[in-house]
Length: 73
Image (cartoon, rainbow, N blue to C red; front, side, top):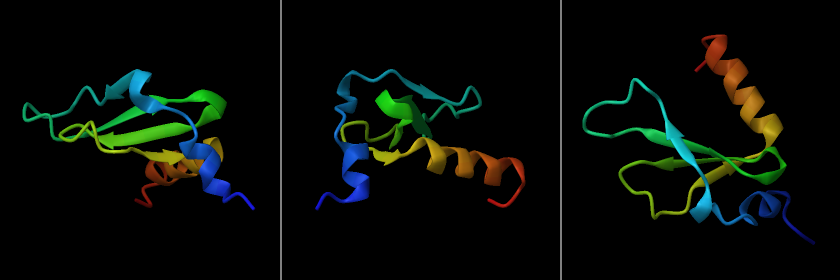
């Protein structure tokens, strides 16, 4: 049986286009986000871009955004 999260990590993020917040500091200590196929979002530490990123489904990412906007996080 496949683990539900396994699909999220099936994509190779090495060719992804990573972006970070325009308000990131001069030290470049921020997170970067990339859009992957199927609505998956990958998140990584800009100081360690070779480390495997965390991946989130479209619904997980939407829930995260709603929580930020609502001030819950």
